[in-house]
Length: 264
Image 1 (cartoon, rainbow, N blue to C red):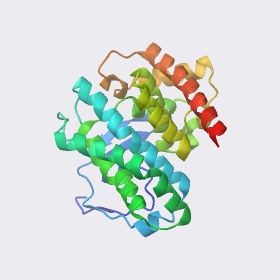
Image 2 (cartoon, helix red, strand yellow):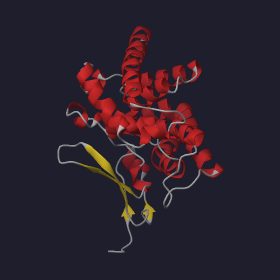
Image 3 (cartoon, rainbow, N blue to C red):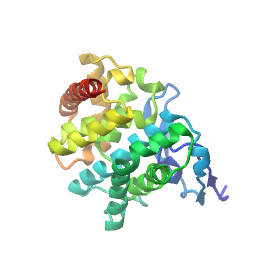
């Protein structure tokens, strides 16, 4: 209708408000694909006082979505795949810097921001993470691109069990899968997994209600491999490699969940 669009999110649960991408699902919740609308919103108005009163689970899911931004940006940079501006272009240094900023803020302020939200108060840490979850992650992924973490999210929709879980919760398990698939540096894996455990993001298939059977993992792997995002990695990926990554990621998540439980 070519009318101005203003979005006023009541939670910082995803980076979707600043995106012009609409995600399409079947009535049963299975991922079909994405469609670009005519333009981004004219204004995204975020009231931190409202966000501070939002459900804890939504805020944590937003951190899961934002946590993937820099990891996926690096993967797309490695393969020189296109971003989501127009018909797709190379990444600018500014886009990469914005993606990295969302990562840095989460590790610097994530735990303190969550503590503030649990009290329903606005602090500087909460303000920073609201910006990371909503603006920086959104501008970051649009200007750099997506890879395995969001690819696994789409793959999970092949099963009915994860449908009741939030976008950022499914992306979080996708992050674990991406770390395994890329054989990421041990220090990065430890940093990410400890953070996810500390804030309560899903790290295993069971956390998403999925039994780790060969049939279910195969369904996720094939749906993931048939989509475009996992192929934004800077190396060859097929369903067998995705299957192995999911299985290993599930084991890795169990290891860190046990470690977190022991340290409590």
